[in-house]
Image (cartoon, rainbow, N blue to C red; front, side, top):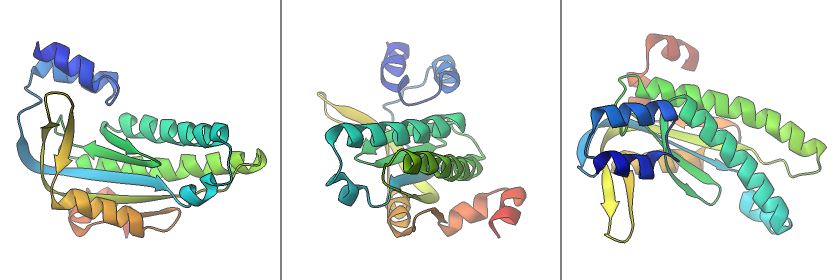
Length: 197
């Protein structure tokens, strides 16, 4: 029963490799846990304004291409897609499977997101589509993770102050920028600290 629940819920939100590991562990995903992990938020800058002049077909095309690329990169670095809200994507690193290097994985993901999105924007420009950059916010800290909701609808998600911090950092980031909280920087490996400095 738990295996079926894991398959049904997570197959769209994590990589096949992580899904296999979750099944092997046979964990109760509904059970709430509190521990340190990393949250990444990414969204398009100026999309709401641009969408007012775009056709519905162009809006869907731009969103689908951008979101698909962000999700593929996040999954490549063991991220779990928490939710998609409009042009924003929220990703968990370190849940539901914990990895000690969750902050490194989030930063690696953000760097690749910036690189791939820059290439995508060059292509959009050639095709006459608007130039829409991305901003990224990353926060590391103690959070509660688990299944939240009702019998009719529930989600596996993270809750806590540091989720809000990641969201605010994303809002503050200018196009093409990644903003981290202090704990994320402190918890990264020496290799990443050298790059970030």
